[in-house]
Length: 551
Image (cartoon, rainbow, N blue to C red; front, side, top):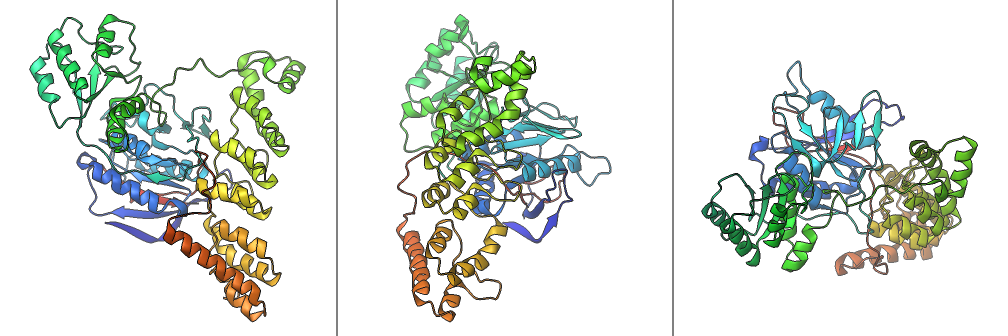
């Protein structure tokens, strides 16, 4: 069972004037990471889910031996993730005089606490990697992990530089949830010269349902071994899903050679440039989907679910003709090379996107997006296009921004989220959609709710009370004088206001019992963002899973 250390810990102010407040959750007993199982992954995932709305992000301290497996598994289990989950650990125990644990822990805390990177990540030796892209490559170096086919998401040197173009975002309006159902009838099989058909046959026998086959080079196998190919074909015909991944550290699987095509003809699915850890975790996750048939599972294995494989893209589109405004600016500065154009684009995008959002120009936003612009970046006040859309009550703009990965957890320099803006300007439909997506008030805002509700009672503002209720405020929260909104309404001789509040409370109770919600009228599909965080207990040689960090 996890033990929560009740007193929060405070980090010193960062360069961005943010202070990280974090809470520690320590598991008992602590595990060497070599002893980790899918049950432990599920326990970590459920603890994140349980604490999701209380923190802006989560840091998991974990031993290095199986950290890549845990990072990959959690990336698939965490569905519609909108906040950073960062795994880290150390090669040398943190209690040793010379160790890498302190730097790794502090780096993970700073990144999880200051940036909205809605991914399961792994931080090690000054680099932040996508969790399902890493593999451990060195047992005797501080630089123990690498991401062979994807550049780091961030590098921490004098400053922390985030590669925002690489950050994966869930394009959804569905709330975060953790799927702990994993199929354990999966395995890794590595081809080697002289492997026998009997060995392959034995490995593929029931109850085996999914196999990652590590092949040569760009996904090649022997095309002169009919006995071997026959066993693979029998297995795929019987419903075993076999994923073709390369044994090479870098590179991808292709069918350019005949020795690669024979494996596809035998029913193998191309694994692209997935690591074996990611392919195995993905197989386990997909095979556990009881509502999918075999063909749907095979199709899902070929899809890029969490950025675990490289899509076939020609690169970001960008030219002088993409934007008349940028064209004029570039010409005035005598700029024409791609790198300088991109720098101008990135500098102008936040202001242009916010301006387009204010007037509801979805077409302009689409143009900026096609240019490779990141529409999640904030302007000089830290306000993102989603903040502007929420302020203006432009539901279509909110819907569009959510479907391209805008985060509901972004905070401007005043600490306000898009939900706060929608509540302030009383846009009920926007509040409903943001709540459906998983938006919620921060701890500070919830603490303020009691006094705000009491002010609304005094002024008899029923619309304001309803908006705050829809946004998730606790209507029983006392104000500064200790009175709840209902108590104040009765004391102030406003029985109609008290009745209205009681009706809102009853509606919430009825909703909870019926399993319905106020947001069912929307069918859109996705999105998320990021915000507080988590830590684990002090790192040891093989530290343990989870810890919360707050902000």
